[in-house]
Image (cartoon, rainbow, N blue to C red; front, side, top):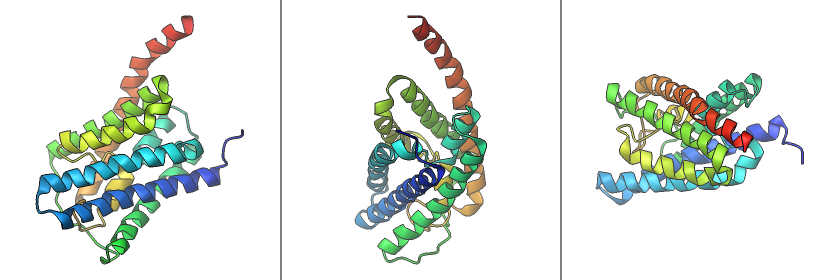
Length: 227
């Protein structure tokens, strides 16, 4: 079977990213409405996000690779697993679709469609958390693709669910999601002024993961080839 053409891959990336952001923002709104307990609301935000990632990667992965994340696309571009022009197309669509996903979530909850977040998320601890979050995500993807490709949807979903709780930033780990969350003044929002630093941290984490996992897995590949 031939690989899907670029148009289909880009549409798959758009659909996946839009649904991902709608799940992140929508579950945050729902959780915030149902409880005043911040910890419980965060749990109500984390579980649907992890769950939707499993679904989206399983269903759309065969079409586009299911990046849904400019940092992941950057990692694959650096590894020459995607052509530069296609990577740019992916990133543009991911960002646009992320914004559409936020608007869709607002519409579903009868909120103003266009918003600007007032939630401050800044400082060295938050930036370090985003480096760690993106590093772990890309590392899990690369190792999963090497050893257990069929498990990648679960690895990503479970990792993000866990990282919501062990990172100070609640693990955005995705520039498209970070940008979109700048335009929702709800539970999952981030002040637009704070978004650029998050995006830079996420890209740094992804690039570190490419370097570390490239070294870590190269010997494994060589040994397996000699068996």
